[in-house]
Structures are given as structure tokens and as C-alpha cells.
Image (cartoon, rainbow, N blue to C red):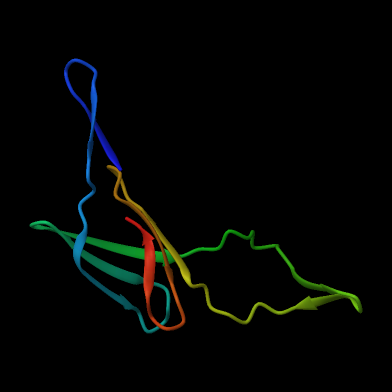
Length: 104
């Protein structure tokens, strides 16, 4: 929901614009996710790189009744972000089936 304040300080709700087209492609090495959104008569392009919410020194462990067992991180990063100047930020997740979700 977007709010726009009038000169008198009254806020009026404006419906968000919806992307009418979404295209995305992952580079062969998995290090760049290019996303193109068409919203109204404008095209927005994003180039996102993988990231993890975990630190590089994080360890994966399985906790069970049998104890704690270390795990290897075998999955490629499927979360991506772009932090460009002037508010052009994006965060996206690419699902195994190729579907894309995110904030742009």
C-alpha cells in the first residue's frame, strides 16, 4: 500500500502498480540473476547476486535424538539481492521449479 500525503497533511491511499511482465534469467555459473519487470509504461532491470543470511563461518548441524551431526552445505544459493543507489534495491528468491518471488 502506498500513501501520498496532500498539502494539508491528509494521507490518501494509492493502489500499488502491478508488474504486467516479469522475465528472469540465471547466468550459467549461478552468480547473476537478471530480472526485468514491466510496470505501466516503464521497464525496470535488476542484476542481482547471491547472498546468504548466514556468515561465512556458519556451520550446519542436524540435531536429533541420536545427537548432533555436521552437515555439508550442498545447495547453491537461491537468494539474491541488488543494492544500487537511489533506492533501486531488490531481493529475490528463485525456487527449484524456476519461479521467482521478491521485493523490487
